[in-house]
Image (cartoon, rainbow, N blue to C red; front, side):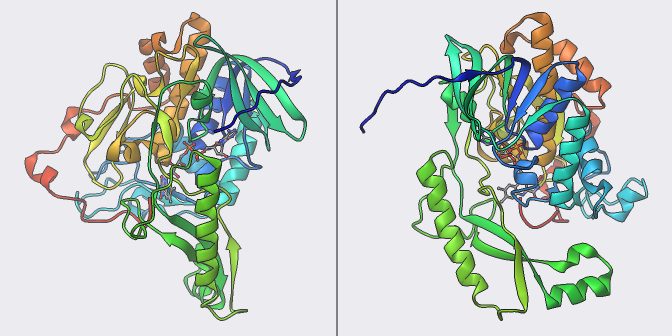
Length: 425
Ligand SMILES: Cc1cc2nc3c(=O)[nH]c(=O)nc-3n(C[C@H](O)[C@H](O)[C@H](O)COP(=O)(O)OP(=O)(O)OC[C@H]3O[C@@H](n4cnc5c(N)ncnc54)[C@H](O)[C@@H]3O)c2cc1C
């Protein structure tokens, strides 16, 4: 490998209390929490819309926020975003939850979920954050961390303005890919990704169906490139997995999927359907996460943590509950960088449980409040005052610890969810 060195003059911009890199749901939650805590916050987003995978990635489904037995587990800002996502669009909340009843049959009752309009949710997030006083910077990519030992002084940002330097006291990496942490040389864990690429179509058939059902969301059909599931089913044999953390790898993923999608679309009758939306970010699930002070694993199911920042449920195995240790958001190798969302520290299937939309919002919310406490207490990330953080989160309706009464008995534990939740995670 050959390298060159070159130096550049970089304009120094205004400084912030907290800079959030990446405006997916985790970044939006982090920025909002930090702004509500009274901090001066900058949120830098690579694309032109907020929401990340949950909007431009076309993943428009809040996985279950309840256990399988009628109790809402994931609340706080996750519930706020859930409501926001459907405020001016459609929803698919099961009737039992709309009516406010407790679903009765544990293994068959619908769980608390919804689909929503990805585009409208993105617009709502922009308004929410702007109204809360977060400074938004779109179409700008965080390319480097300027470090002094283990303290991040500022980030380098590329945009139409050229290259700029933004200093801050605390940084939150919500790029989903731990980009900032990697640039700061903080240890990370590399994940693997399958060939998945899903877009939306409309056709005469789907339009007819929507008219019949009276449901606007029925106008959409799906078109696919790769069809791999969360568990890797349908990933082509002999095809290597994708890392999602190099330019070549991302480009290769896009080339393969876009050609496959075109081939699949070319089997339809031209003029009878259109492809109306393609994902404008790669649909990667687990690319890179922080090697945190705790790495969440499936061994942690039903385990209480003193530093829990929120209880979450398993979307695919109703009844299973986890608490998220604060230590999944930080590393002793980074004094003033926190992370949240897809890049919170986890391994195996526990990474899947932790990264989906509602938990990503919970970790984002916790990171935003924690960043504010770090500034107030003049502490490093690992020394953040956990009791204060838990009190703030509890005041914002986060369930910090699950009640042991919610842990099911042996018989129930053996049974896998009978009522599947929805198509893809
Ligand atoms: C195929 C698939 C299906 C899924 N299905 C579901 C589902 O049905 N329900 C569910 O709840 N979850 C599902 N998920 C998971 C869920 O969508 C994500 O895990 C969640 O939305 C992650 O949010 P995030 O904010 O952590 O990361 P992301 O959504 O990845 O957001 C990261 C943001 O950072 C920005 N960014 C990246 N790098 C930079 C940079 N260097 N500088 C500035 N900005 C940057 C990106 O543009 C993006 O906006 C699915 C995921 C996939 C891939």
